[in-house]
Amino acid sequence: MKKKSIWDFYEMKKAGTKITWMTAYDYPLASFAEAAGIDMILIGDSLGMVVYGYDGTVSVRMDECIIHCKAVRRGAPNVFIVGDMPFGSYHTSDAYAVANAVRFVKEANVDSIKLEGGVRIASRIRAIADAGIVVIGHIGLTPQSSGVLGGFKAQGRTAESAEAVILDAIAVQEAGAKMLLVEAIPPELAEAITKILTIPVLGIGAGADVDGQILICGDMLGYFAAFTPKFVKKYANVAEVIINAIKEYVDDVQAVRFPAPEHTYSVLSEEKEKFDEMLKKYIKN
Ligand code: KIV
Image (cartoon, rainbow, N blue to C red; front, side, top):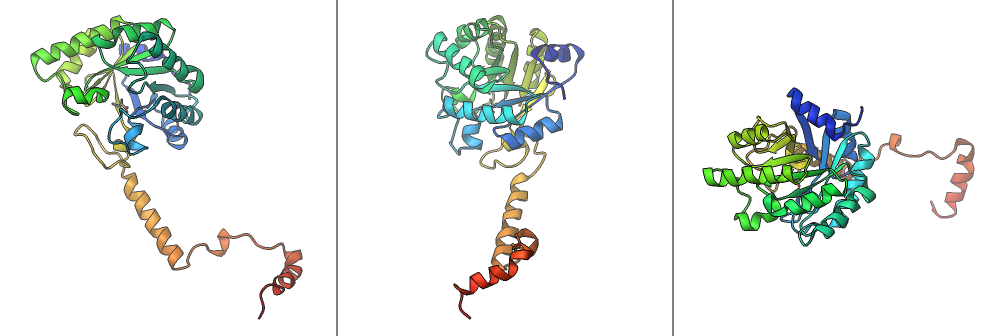
């Protein structure tokens, strides 16, 4: 499989070919995603919830993101991978944002970084893009600011708030982002943004009329049960498969069905006699 570049995604937008994107946080899943032919992988800060069991994304740290990006890079060397800048890694200054974006590229070899916000973080996008790093914007429902949004709520459902989302989208593109993710907005608004912008627009909870889709692996594969948003389609129930497998293992061990002879190592045949003699020294009768 040939790794796609950012410009391939522009060609796909032009041709109307949908871009496929999902999250992954570890080596095995990244390798499965590459084998399945995914275009892009995001090591989302959703790893805080899906992998670490935090109740949101704000406590996720840079070093956690970098470790998981490295694992995904090893698992999917031929997929375009995107590191997600965690809360606090780009909020205080343009220089700090650039320094952290550079860490993603140098330490984890990502192809791009993603950060949340529109008009309010345009200068950060500009600074990171000027450093030669591919930036992906993220607007609409931005989980890192769910506190000020009043929770994990869909955005742009009134004319006024929809216009604010459009202005964010334009600001992201004008600041130099090469792609945009829109989250939890009405499909009509997502479609309009996709038409207004020249950069590819991907969606999550934003309907089908965008240039591509992303889903969080824990949701789509059914191994994160704490909360499933309305926009998720579940393609597998991995949790059920794993729980059933572990139950079977527990039963087998308790009933001494596992391990069976085929799971063990035999004593070398030419050593068998000496071996049995040696054991007799320790085990009487
Ligand atoms: O962190 C994440 O997984 C995200 C999703 C909204 C795609 O940003």
